Image 1 (cartoon, one colour):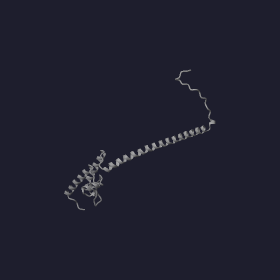
Image 2 (tube, rainbow, N blue to C red):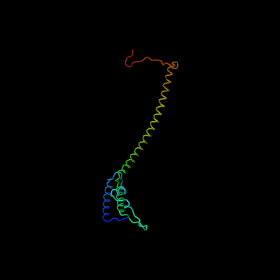
Image 3 (cartoon, rainbow, N blue to C red):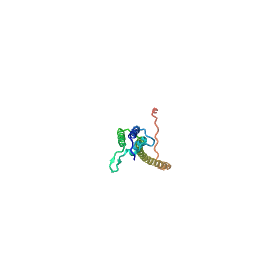
Image 4 (tube, rainbow, N blue to C red):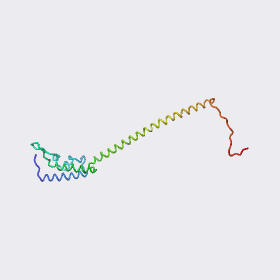
Length: 164
C-alpha cells in the first residue's frame, strides 16, 4: 500500500480532530454513535488507520492515526466519568431503564393493592351473606307468629304532661 504524504496526513489529522470535537460535543450524524467508526466516516479517512499495523516480520507498529483514536477514547471516557452523555441513544437507554424500573415498581404496588382489595371483597361478601342469612331467618320467624311472644304494652307516659 502506498504511503501518504506528510501534507495529506496533516490534513487528515485536522479533519479527524474537527470530527472528534463535533462528536464529543454531541453533534452525531443520523445513525452514528460516539465511536471510531463514526469518527472515521465523519473525517473521511479509513478506519484501519486507527489500529496498529503488522510489519512483514510480524512486529507491530502504530497506525498512522492510532494516537488520535487513543485521544478520542480518553476524551470520551473523561466526559462519561464527568457524567456527561455524548450519545443521545445512551441518554435514551438510561431514561428507558429508569422508566422501566418505575413501571415495575408501579406494577408491584398495583398487585399489592389488588390483593388487598380481593381480600376486602371476600370479607365483604362473607359479611353480606351472613347478614342475608340473618334477614331470611327473621323473615321466616315473622311468617310463623306462633313463634313470637307478645310483650305487654305499658301505657305511655308523656313527660311534658302534668300528672292527674
